[in-house]
Image (cartoon, rainbow, N blue to C red; front, side, top):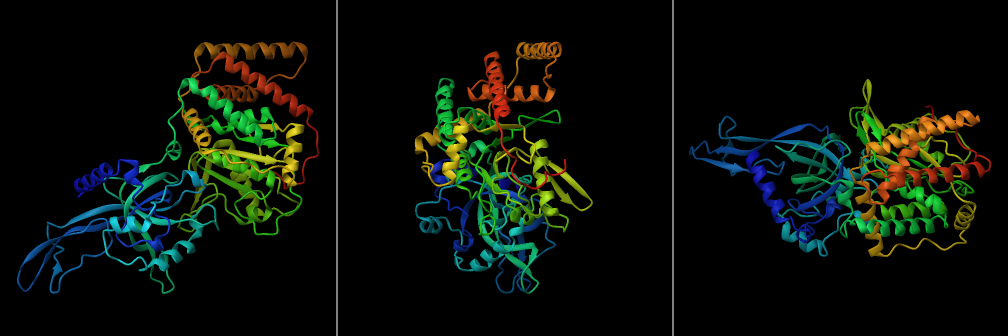
Length: 555
């Protein structure tokens, strides 16, 4: 059966290799509207791959005891038992029986996937389902049960309380289930099955949407950006200038802050010899404070107009972004770290796909009591910033899983979190955002579709460049660092630290990437040094009281 599964997979991949053909397949977003046996596609994140393996009798030898007649019954991509004619039964001892192995994973719609990066639904969903349906089951059959089941298990979705879709996805041998938090595009057969870890009101296994994967592929962040082709070398300068101008307009004309915001959006964490390289969390300081806590229940959305302006601008440019307002009610209620201490993996806010932008808003943090859970949540977020890892709590141990989250913190004063880089907004930018907060400035105008596609493709292409530092440039930087420390020592000035040098090298690397350069140049190094000097000068000039806030998380 493994050979048969490969044959079916290859045939379907060939049939739907064309993007237009693939778009004819209905998107799995409303299970209650689907017929059992429909071919569907599901862009999802693997929330829990530990549902184990199942065996299914794919080829069964059946026998009629009265006549002695035998037949073979075939069944694949379903959990349904073989439907036998009257008087027939399965010969379980027959050597002709074939069992199929499948790995089961709990998958959810991708947290933070922005609307422009989501799969397109066919123009006529009903006609597409009719054309592709492999069975005659009613769409209403079990539909309400499937919807109720998904709503009931919101503990397995990272952004609790937010609408989402979930399904048990079954991966057939020889394909193994992808790892936790991986984003995949699945094409498979939908049916209403059962969830082995959920019970209904009668204590039976709960009805649950299932997708039997015919084939699947990992959807890396770059694949989530549709549209124009990647920029060529000569176009990087134009795209970079366009992006900087757009970000500066978002920030009230602050070109320095726009430079650092661009570098932040280009950052990507990679592991090199057990060390994390490339992370660049950013703290924009000088945002207007929200006057009072919102009356409505806290949810995963920015509520202040100024913070929302920046969050919406980021969401226009990156495929994955999650907003986390630092409201005490949310911090004390939500769970940031995933936990399987009760035997089933419950999601945490930080169980996100690699490449997700996390926009944290401290401007809505007001005086109050930060409970034990709130402190743990901030500690989990701080760990993700510093080490790019998220702790999964299992019985008797916590397993640190690597991640790649870009964290942008918006704050009035210096953030309560330790970030890689902090940039004070200029006085003009702070005044502009204060007018935005008061409703006295024009709202954010969305990018036109062509420019939006160009900037999205520019960011993803530049971010994926394989980057190196030539030995001559590395030697020059080391020599310059030694000279600076020698000169500072002779003059009695403060010495440049190793951490400041590492930050400057990171800035230089990102400056090079923003220009489409795969190798660090001396010009980019000097540009990075100039940016760091300007940032330090602005920080020295900035004055203002630290906003009232909760204590920082323990380190």
